[in-house]
Image (cartoon, rainbow, N blue to C red; front, side, top):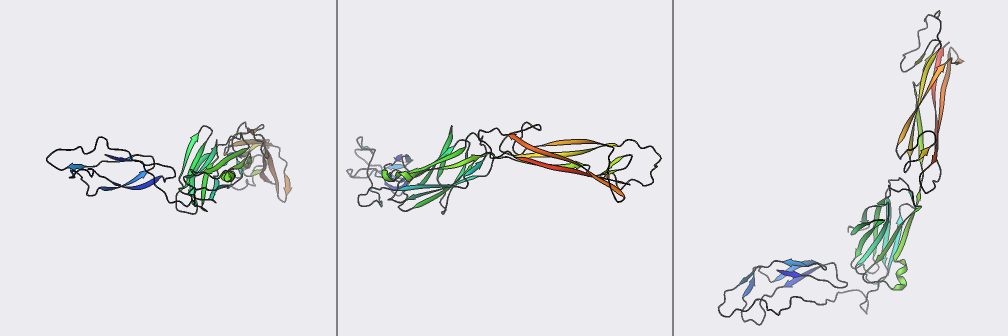
Length: 370
């Protein structure tokens, strides 16, 4: 078995090697061991600081006389060497990058309960010499979910990973090895903040970049930036209603809904029959819906209404001894009810920008023949 591992400072994360396998040393007059493979030079693709092994088939030639061990007992099994990498680091061969970080968000205001994605555009530029093992870090606040990352302006995928923690998480993205002088990388990160509880007024996203070839201390001030978005509590309520029945036809003995009576009552009804008191009912139905981040209290109507929920309020009225206004040969009037919804309070530490109200009217037209 042949095992190879490489490492070092400033070396790439992956590297291709050509390994020349020598089975018998040059001091032996005859080569006894041969590889089953046709070539003694093997190609290996390795990852930094990870051991990679190959199984080799070795054959021994039948040779008469004294046999020596294939591997000397005192042979070295570990080899360490230095390879000079070609780097654009000036005459002193010491790279001093100058990384700068900028961050811009798709919004600076986040509403509690909003399910819209938050997009963070991050630009990292190198104004100095080549930067090796360059990485970007973004600290994700609690209650915010990381969705994914995309590298803009290129077909190269974003090499980002997310590590969750008790109070948030950390995103780590590779920027290139090296990130060349005057190069720029633009990453677009997406987040969701649909589970905010309204306990904080701002969400902060600290962003910073570094490398194994550090900046000069005088230029590290722009290696980091904090993107902040204000958290806002806002509610929206709507009210709509319907009349059951939609309209009514009345005479001195009854009240009928148009939906259940086709046409007007016959004109030849027996008028000598003593008229009984007219008692009937109409129903006004109101539906109230809330669009808000979480539950809140509405005085005298409901105790709790979550985002997207609603409730229906039935208002039933009795009709007796109706006096209608005369218009031509008929008398007409309307039964009207009104509703007004007021949000009294919201259970957040953040004060809402305004407490919403809503209202509407429902009318039931009525008519009768004179």
